[in-house]
Image (tube, rainbow, N blue to C red; front, top):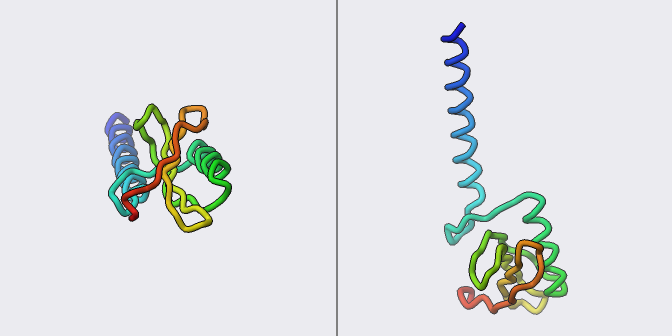
Length: 102
């Protein structure tokens, strides 16, 4: 019975390990940064789009710059791209022009 339980535990750990690696790979954006998803990421996206008066969210990441918790890259309706940094309560920290995009 111990051998069966041990085999099941090892198999479960392998499946979880593979699933975790796939999740991390799927969350990476073109810059190699780790994107995030889920309810909090959705809240960050909605807050950023409200602050920019619309547009399209390109990426959502955890962030620590300027005291922020979230960074949402938004392509505004005028075509410019900005980084919207939010705190843990999804309140504005700063909106910065995204200089990496030119």
